[in-house]
Image (cartoon, rainbow, N blue to C red; front, side):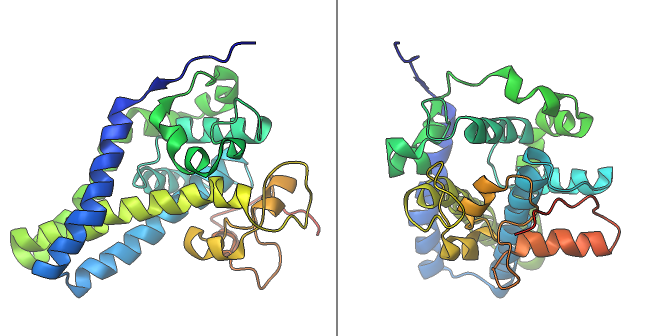
Length: 276
């Protein structure tokens, strides 16, 4: 059977190249010639955590796997935070992720690790997938908050870049706005993107499989250090709906700690947990 052709997604390619060049060339040059302030680094850390957890807790565990439930306003906060990561709207991201689990390691797996590191890490985003099917988005499209975020995805992304610029502008004028924008805006997005990509690539190519070898998923504890606990990927593929990726108390999984803390505050409920 002939494989469907893949068309290049030129807007995504151009955007990724711009963010990459600014991060690996522009940010170091600016740092050497001008320097970054403590505020810039604080904003980088705060927005890295906010947008990263928006993906891991919001897009991934809450929406894709329904590992817990929460009030509408909390869902909206996670959707905005996830949008700041520049990883597509929740409708698209979660639809692709549901397809990944349904067709893992097969041709229509969006980030099929069988095609190598480059494809599974970031190469897959440079093509318009011919395998995107409405059936993976049916439930998502019934959620008004998800559809709201999908409609206003671009303004949400821009707000995530405008925020550090505005904070820097208030603190240090135009140059302060530029420095905070470069570090906590563009550079932060680049690192959040690549940390997430590590789950699709590294955690399907290298690591242990203590919970099952039915697919290529692997546990890489060190990936969890930059992905808020998502590195325990073999456990996750085995127990999809568990709100924990790292099931042991000593596993570094800030995402599960946040979900558990929200439950104690009455802001999360129906936490799914597999006995293990």
